[in-house]
Amino acid sequence: SVKVYLLFNLLNSMILGAITPKNIGDKRTTLHPQSIKAVLDMGIKVIFESGIGLQADIPDKALSELGAKSLSREECLKQADIILCSEPIKSDEIGLIKKGSSILGLLEPFNNKAQFKTHAEKGINSISMEFIPRTTRAQKMDVLSSQSNLAGYVSVIESAKLLNSALPMMMTAAGTLKPARVFVIGVGVAGLQAIATAKRLGARVEAFDTRPIVEEQVKSLGAKFVKIDLGDTGQTDQGYAKELTKEQIDKQKKLQADVCANSDIVITTAQLFGKPAPKLIDKKTIERMKPGSVIFDMAVESGGNVEGSIADSLQNLNGVKIIGYSNLSSFVSDHASFALSNNLINFIIDFYDKENAQMNFDLEDEIIKSSMFVKDGKILKK
Ligand code: NAD
Image 1 (cartoon, rainbow, N blue to C red):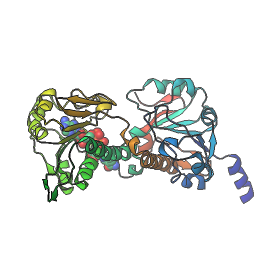
Image 2 (image 1 turned 60 degrees about the horizontal axis):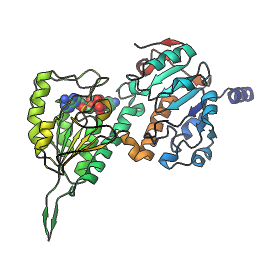
Image 3 (image 1 turned 180 degrees about the vertical axis):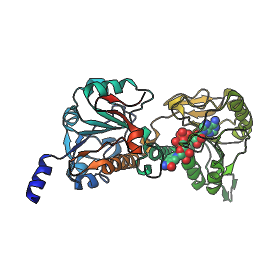
Image 4 (image 1 turned 30 degrees about the vertical axis):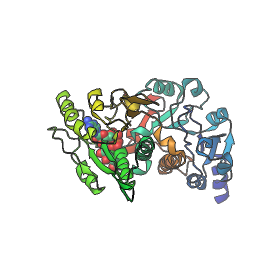
């Protein structure tokens, strides 16, 4: 009967839990009040570590008013059937998690392989959001895109703050102020948003990427595509750039140096999936740039595109400011949390089996197949 069914569901509801990142630079929460209604409506219980949203100015009350429950970190780890996180969970805390529970989040799999062995030993499932495929169906779960987009915006805002000039052209009685020249190297998700943001602020924008397909996108944003013929470059079937040969990189560096020398702001976003970022700007190029100009190395966390850039610092080379900030989406932590939470909750909704009040991790599904690292004690990827 309906009553028995309801009672069964009440006793059997799945618990979704979220914990605060330990990395103090990560100011995001994986549960945003504007996105949890959908899971609560499905009968999923939601618990979260007290204070989880404080760095994004989201008080516990904003979540608890909706029906989510604030608990200690330990209780969250113990009770949750699914744990949302924006960083890998350290091995000393894995022991708190129930066997059969799942970890869903940004697990940085390339740098943290050992965690999967621990998960497998403890019978905990793990899913890395970095490996959500870049298909149309999975777009709403694509954490890399949602965060890169905001990072691209932040890179322009932070560079603009450090530039001693305004970005737009201004014709004033005191004279004409020239627009700033911005050069964006690498036009993936972050690069496109950097171009769009710089354009909105009135800068003259140029951009380059090794994937020729990008030229159209650059032009559609009103920016100029810098033509550098590197011969065969291409992209992988997931749309990622292929690694260039040493000769190609040398040629690229040489030809783009002139554009850098004429730019006020250079933003580099070039990344190779799972590999160190290509080194694209060396000291020789920086020495040709004007004092007061700004370089923002968005690839600093994966090795950097720029010689001399250092993570989380501002360097100065002959008056050229080199920014290497990390955790960029956390500069706009409310929006970053909203997007991240939506991505994770979209995943939950798509793979939630309401009848049995549990997740259905079907390895035949391309999204699960691509993102699931550990299932039922087995490591699924090398
Ligand atoms: P990314 O962060 O891996 O790299 C950033 C950019 O750097 C890329 O555009 C890459 O081509 C470029 N790059 C690499 N080496 C370079 C070099 N030597 N010089 C200049 N540029 C260089 O990229 P991303 O933002 O994650 O996007 C990767 C791809 O995925 C793109 O094709 C993007 O359109 C695609 N994508 C598709 C979907 C979807 O369909 N759902 C969603 C997001 C992204």
